[in-house]
Amino acid sequence: MTSFTQAFKFQNPTIINFGLDTASGIADLVAELGGSKALVVTDQGLVDHKIVNPAIQSLEESGCKPVVFSDVPPDSDLQCVERAIEYAKREGCDVVIAIGGGSVIDTAKAVNIGLCNEGDLRDFEGINCLTHRLKPMILVPTTAGTGSEVSAVAMIRDKENGKKLLYGSRFLFADIALLDPRLLVSLPPHLTAATGLDAVTHCLESFVSTTANAVSDSLALEAGILLFANLPRATSCGDDLEARSSTLLASCMAGLAFTNAGVGVVHALAHTIGGKYGTHHGLTNAVLLPFGLRLNMSTTEKLYARFWRHLAGSGVSRDMPYTSLVYDPSLNDEQAALALVVAVEELLKLCGLPRSLRELGIPELTDEVVMELAEVAMTDPAIMFNPGEVTVENLVDILREAF
Image (cartoon, rainbow, N blue to C red; front, side, top):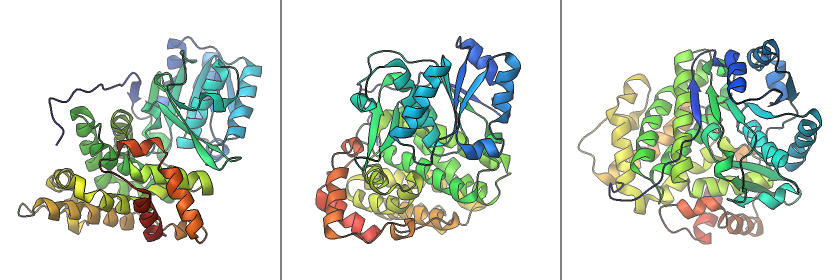
């Protein structure tokens, strides 16, 4: 359990605006920030399905002409970001809005870096490499998973070098996160589940992180209950606004938790695999999570047991068929911790998610490739927050077992 004598700093400079149909009032928020011409970063699917319409209509009616950039791919890259920067500069945009999932939001953050700084985007890669405030930014998630709307990081794929670039700075916090559950209603089941498992991973990894604190713990625990209770329902019944609202709020809460506490080995491997193969981040986390939990078991047994007791004690199993979450006060810490791993595996099954890297379309992993992936993952910043020591051999084992 986190010590209450441990010093910590918790950051949450972003205003969170949560509620049904809040997207239709986005123009008022732009006005509050002093914006007059908004770059709206999104993807073509959201344009085609008219998910962006409430926000666009709000901006148009207010006289704040939106400049829409909708050419964001599922796994955004430097080339996409550079095109968007050029477009925004040409149009004279003075505020950045993202409407979309993690790829769209990360793209908008990187675009904001380019709008306010000269030079190659690679020059600003890393932690605390930005020196001044960026343009006002409003982030509107259309998935419940990344928590990127309240994080201070962005991940952009460098296809040329086969890796993910990480940008981390307090200047990447959005001014406003606008959470409108109505925007998630048409999200397909497979994306609902995949992004939701990203949020579950944020909960579990931040809870056992070396820099976890009482505030991040409370967010991770409550977000965990909301996700285990509502993610299967949101996946199978997309128009269930209660389930959508719960998972969207949980994703944001988990985002606040991991932004302040960090993540761990699962994310380090997911970043590496995604950089090389372009796999969906949430799906990659989903496959790797049970293996990461087992790797850390010897260090985190008491914490996993606490998380399980919190979940099981909430009565989640009354509404969802989790055999592992039926509360049993006789379980010792080891048994409760193992029950948590089983609960994660049950959640994956309930949501119809893949269980192996092979199912993600990754080709046969040779010894050489496995070693390459493991060595790159060892350099990922997420690894420093993992609760136990991780070796290259540990990562090699996970990759082989997960394949």
